[in-house]
Image (tube, rainbow, N blue to C red; front, side, top):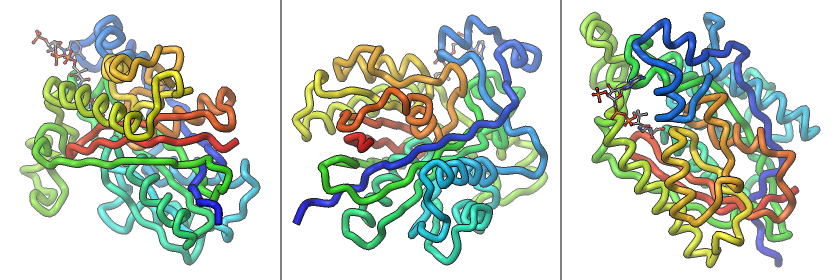
Length: 329
Ligand code: UT7
């Protein structure tokens, strides 16, 4: 019997219409376009402005688009996994809400919280169900409304993040294409360096948590930068080595989009030229769990069946992860 791999057979993205430019940020905090572009590569990001809409809205839009594009009916889906750190509610899960909004009923759905590595974590989990034969159609969503946890008086963080979502369909493949290998890593030692402290069980919402700005994302940028460069490069090199891939074998590096300099350092370590690196950070900033599917969405036209792709990510936790994917269509 031929080995079953979980292949990506469809991809769709969704970003809100509102464009938050560097020029507009200059009116909010003491920053400038030159600093933001040279230090991060970001020119603009999208913001979900409409009141009452959360990450589930963007995730559901991506899933609706995915179903329409692939011609799959909601009732054919066996499982939906949503990677997010900005759930609509602490509970129920955003995955449950997306199912309700897209007509995917009576199947398992749950959230994965692995911050910027969330999409690769969810991909690894979803792939197992396909490889074992338990499920035939699994949807993986990455969605984050980062503007909900941004302090637009903090120039060190508010210039970095944006809102967006992406979704992929996983189906069995016996031609040798799909998720060939993946690895997920975590180490809670750096937990305080990238965190939203308030609103959970340790510091439930109170006047004090609001006054102390604990419901916003806090980041120790330099420490996170150092760990991100090291771990994203390490994890990418490791997955290439254990799959005997040289830089010539890799068609595309699909890196998490946190900072152009981190992406360049990762590509450099892998010996991959920037012409083989997917990058859209200039348009969307860091959309956390959505960066990798949004890259695949933007570059879909350039992908060919059998292309070797390396996904790599690093984020809060710390978490980091990589995947070796052979493109299936
Ligand atoms: O996706 C999750 C993982 N997250 C990441 O991977 C993010 C990792 N970190 C980074 O990308 C970078 O550390 C940042 C982009 C956040 C910051 O870049 P940096 O080169 O590490 O800058 P820095 O924090 O060392 O700050 C350099 C200077 C400081 O001024 P002084 O102290 O040298 O006078 C900052 O106050 O730049 C100043 N600065 C700014 N200036 C203008 C910080 N933010 C800004 C700003 N505009 N927005």
